[in-house]
Image (tube, rainbow, N blue to C red; front, side, top):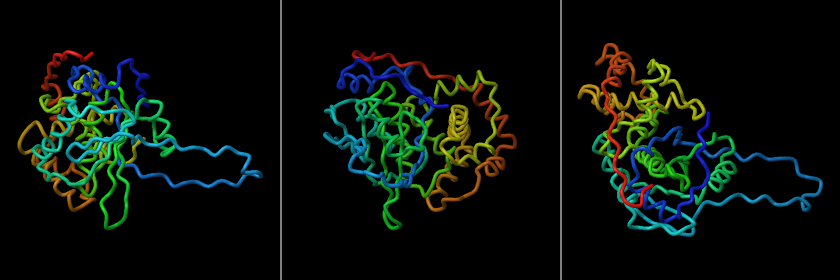
Length: 311
């Protein structure tokens, strides 16, 4: 399943960015965001045509780069002017500190490049040309190797849509994690991003995921989730369950919080620490039942009142 969002909005670029900085929480929720580390596919070769000069030379869509704005570890690139005082930038600046405080991780120093495409069409044209095997998603995070002794290039690509705030928080969470950890299991990567894509005052509660799980007759299965390793294996139910496990571990008991934080600390030096489930079962005899109870008791946050200019 793919998650395509509607076409371009009729807002101006400046109005869009300003409004997204303080949107009603009703518009939040990632839907189906991969944000997964993706390596550039190998370039394929084809047999030469009988008369190559007669064929048009294909052009690869370019990333935005006319304007740029530096915020904390991020450098935003666009082909339209950005408003440096937009509240969205201030919120994103605080995201590393939020992650550091909740996960007990050091703040990384790697620069994260964020390419903001003007519209969905330009964004998708670039992604499909550069990474033709990737499924359609609203946003992507890429960690591409530069060499064994050099840190990975950390890049986020997305477009100026109505989910921009959520998408940036989600993908930048991936980038911040991969800037300090050796590796992140797919389910954990997406679960943590699903928690931190929500503004800090929501305490990680993803209303859309919570409501979907309650309506679906959710049967948690962390053992299955931990075996997934490819982007295309993550559909909406998997994103929802990944969020549920991470929220449960971080926001239930101190003992559960220690399990996930210790596991994350291990990932700083060991890219293959094995599954988390046995460590959790040592603390919680029946994790599936307790997770279900956690979701039953969890209250959805109240929606924020939109400010003037938001729509």
